[in-house]
Image (cartoon, rainbow, N blue to C red; front, side, top):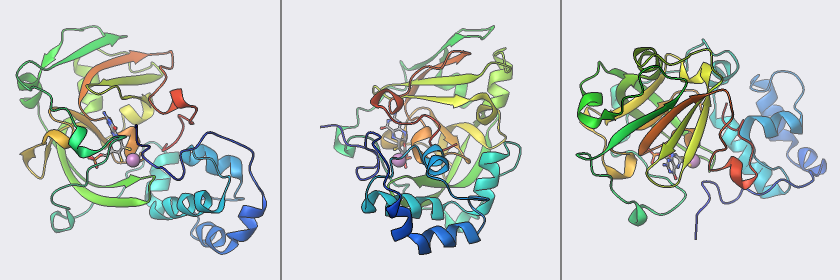
Length: 262
Ligand SMILES: Nc1nc2c(c(=O)[nH]1)N[C@H]1C(S)=C(S)[C@@H](COP(=O)(O)O)O[C@H]1N2
Ligand SMILES: [Mo]
């Protein structure tokens, strides 16, 4: 059985009970006081932020806790694409990182780095595929950022890899296009808006804490954004497409809001 990245909150959208807001007033007020949701808190805004359905108390609570986990600066970076998300120090880095996928870790199918290729498609001038060796030779940038999963947990990770914006320019991608879409070795797909793809803290990660990323964490290539929720960070990437047409994502295909996490 496929496991949801957030069993309690990723449920198909239904009607929303306004009394839930009432029941959770304290949490809501706290979040508002901290300016996380500038202005009036609306269910529409909450749904847009997290892509989650707010239809029962459990949902509401994990949902609000998730938003609480985002601090002001991350929120700022979410709404103002050029603002930077907070970074952390090396001694705060979790080792090993914490695994998640829509299935269990025992079901991860390792990718063969020797035969692996990154396929390129769409609005890109140079669509020659890249081997892992070629990608691992590119200049790398380090990101020590917080990974936040909508399940309500988070950790600080130290990721290195080529800046996605620089990589897009190198391959002659049309950076005025709307989306950058990813396919993965499992059947996962994710799509980023171009502003996020070009954000200075978005990388194609090849290393964790200076070592090549290991199988469960997306070897040989995974996305790492500082301004998006965990599930936007596609692991085991096999193909990248630059497009003006929205390509449905693993979660959007199941009726969830793509906007989640941005
Ligand atoms: N290919 C693929 N990428 C994925 C997932 C997945 O199931 N398949 N799960 C997502 C979710 S929900 C999270 S929280 C993060 C977990 O990344 P981590 O294992 O490095 O912490 O990966 C994201 N990327
Ligand atoms: Mo997640």
